[in-house]
Image 1 (tube, helix red, strand yellow):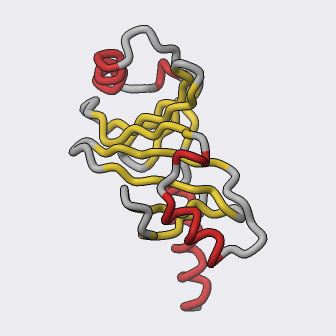
Image 2 (tube, rainbow, N blue to C red):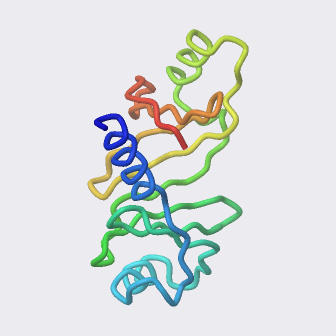
Length: 142
């Protein structure tokens, strides 16, 4: 019985944590307004709801962007895809040491609302997060 309850709770929490795709008309007005204030003439390719927040994915100046906003329209973080060559040296060293034979598939620079920068490297179906100096912080499953 306890196992069934645990599995049910795990399934429910996993489904809540997954991003939900949204049509632009389903995005709250404050979120759209916050986005348009920073990115006036940008067309969003995909909207998603992530928990209580909203994510907009779009291209700008031939780069892929992702912006996370709260329900009030405040930008929480901005993620920009970058060439792997722009990652800090520590990132490449960590991957070489800990993921032998694997290559970095994609790289991103993430800037939060306070201006703190982190980097994301996609390796072996995992997202590795590093600080601005290339020091490993954590692993996330995409």
